[in-house]
Length: 193
Image 1 (cartoon, rainbow, N blue to C red):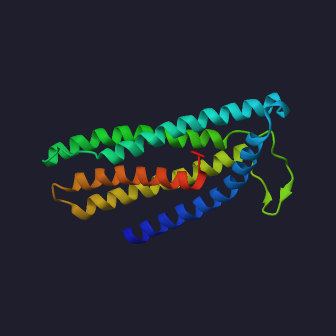
Image 2 (cartoon, helix red, strand yellow; image 1 turned 135 degrees about the vertical axis):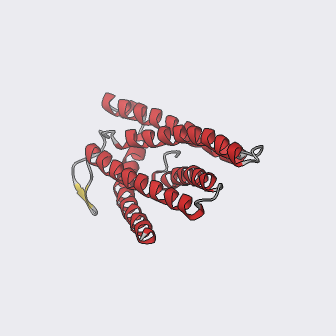
Image 3 (tube, helix red, strand yellow; image 1 turned 60 degrees about the vertical axis):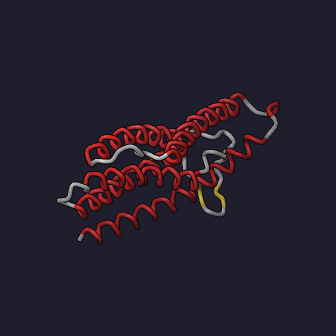
């Protein structure tokens, strides 16, 4: 039963992600085109949009870079007992959760920006999503991912229950899934570009 739930959650997450990529890709391309136009021809509204976009990108970049550096350093090299591992991983998860929330918050904020250079015309793929629709879709995908994340780490814990290693496996799952999801989101949204 859990395998079917996990497969269903993964499938839903992937389908939602593909839909988000398609809608965001067009918005990001239009935002990048606006960013490349000469400053002297930009309106105040365009300049404000680009300033906010730059701010959100810097916030996301800082969180993403910090988490990559933390992951590279390794988490708990001096923890040997189960208690030490659980304690150390708990601290690691707090830091990773803060970076994850900052990164996802930056993406959420970018999705909510109204690009003044966008037109309301239909393109080959149809009508572009409004900023509000983009935020709603992004939030829906993140909610689906959170459901998957919780179910996957519960299953990881249950696979080792009642052993003393079960909490370590569960915490490691949380840490790894958040880091993997940050990389996944970066590959999709390319906030760092």
